[in-house]
Image (tube, rainbow, N blue to C red; front, side):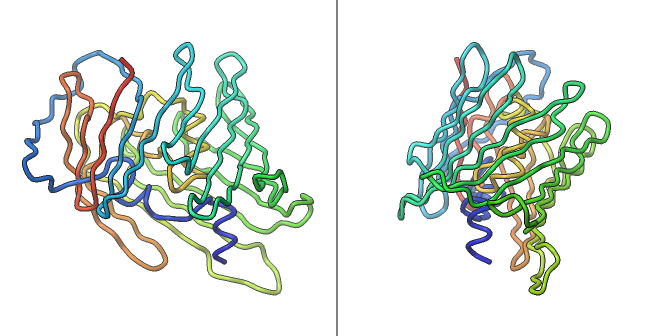
Length: 286
């Protein structure tokens, strides 16, 4: 099962949903925390760079690249992952996500071709392949909504010949107002002679501030694809208008709870987040 998870999720680490990704950190001695400044300021900013340092001291810098105010790619300074986005007008039509094991050099490339109805992303089809182009899996994904918010994303994964169903990957989302308060990943094997228990990862988000989300302006289609296919580097917190302060992550093997504090700029955007597990620094397009 370890190899299956590796191929589908990239490197199935709880880091992005646990406290060493996204809004990390806490307990920084000598840091003076601002009170919440609210969102009355109308200034809108695009995220440019996120620097995360986990509790082991490992540092990753993620850079968001734009052209004509459109997100065109995402890169990491250690080459562990990158995204390339293709547009037709204002719609993202293709997303290519590459995840590489920096120790072994092994890489997986997930390519998704996107289809819209009424301005909403409703379907994507794609493949997961090795760096030499060898196809490992073929996937088809449906995006389901409740009014204007995502409700669930369901992917059927077949073998390289696109004939034998192997897995179902599903993400379910729950919102309270304009903030995402719960999301659940589940990976289930197709019925067959050999069965295994589903892999389930549930994250509860709570105690939101009243400030602006640093990932809020990222394209919705990018956030949908990333939150579903890329657990390590996904931007699921960007679905919320505000920033959560408490996270509870429950997997098949453990439960993690983390509390977050933020420093804000004059426009109400976080510039620093801290928790028991590390820190994250946000920089914006000037």
